[in-house]
Image 1 (cartoon, rainbow, N blue to C red):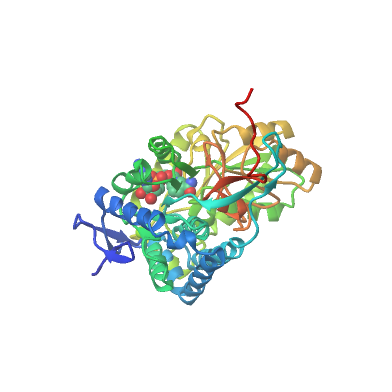
Image 2: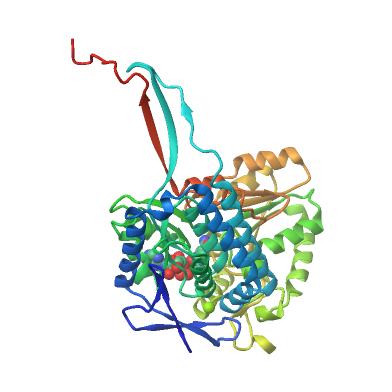
Length: 494
Ligand code: NAI
Ligand code: MG
């Protein structure tokens, strides 16, 4: 089997280590591919290529925005041609149902087209400044930051790559990129597409490997101007510390423990469905998953009866068979989730359904966990406080709106939150109090590349997507023009 390579300075190259990594399908444990396993030297070679491309000839950053836009549109077209292949790749590598992967691919294509359309629109401003130094005109321009390092997780392999690459490239940056070692295959195909689209060499560089050997080198490097990362809060913290060396710009999209607040006046069946989407989509491996159901006591029993019935009806299976829910990314992640389930039982929560690995039929060699719901949770339990990143829902109850808000905000995270009620004013009151970056009224999870995405508190720093997501990859330069260059100010003549 061929060993998939790094892409550095426009060429496919093997790591200097000569090591390779097995890429495993979580649906059945089978070997899908080998990737080259890089180290610090490879990471530095990629950074050097990006640095030369940006600060040397600077072909990409000096291009008219409309020319860079054409590259992005070309990339989107090529992705469309290979859409089915990209979706199948993520399904095999990550385990998600094929229809979810197909949705990811179409979102990814839309994201490239969105930034292609955004980049040549007017930006910057003209400022009416104080005239103390004489007639002065001031304007601002947005410029690329420089060398951007980007690190992605495994839960949305292609889509997370595109959320980072599309705005960074639109803005004219040069990039070094490391996908998760657990699901790198669709990102490799994306770089094949970059190659085919003819991106100038050194503009986008791919380094395959793990966090400590490659990701940490990106974070520390004095030659990297910005680092953006999606993944765990702990790794985000270590990246922020390492980034302090040269005070590079940092963008972090981290964990969550987001609330779904359901009031008694909700449309019950619709609310049950949003609760399902909020925790069982992508097998719960979603940073913005609404993993804490905070429900008004008076409807809890009726709501949970319907929810448990639906959760028990969820089909599990290999992603290619298009089940309701796919596998967990790795055996280690599966075991971590099972540990959380064990802790929930030990700390006294009531297990309503699931709670174990699933190994029937075609799932026998895969990493599957049954949809799991815990009732009677209290706010000090680990399954209520910590991000599980799996199909495990923890249920808490409230009697008053104030109580609901207090429970919703009782977390160190602040990525997302949702409220379900037919009372519009109440929905807006709760929304106003929620300390979270992405919020939903009468739904949970819909995500759009046109709108900013990111978290409060320990859920991160900065925003991806939308106009904010482009501006993160730009510096703002202030230009001051003296309109009377002949005049002397006379400052020292007193
Ligand atoms: P992780 O945060 O360790 O890994 C994410 C990415 O960071 C990967 O590409 C990894 O290689 C890289 N990385 C790891 N250590 C690094 C370091 N020191 N410097 C630079 N890059 C580094 O997450 P992991 O281990 O895959 O999953 C652990 C937990 O993280 C999950 O159980 C879940 O709770 C959380 N997670 C959250 C995600 C989110 O979107 N919020 C996504 C993935 C995981
Ligand atoms: Mg895999």
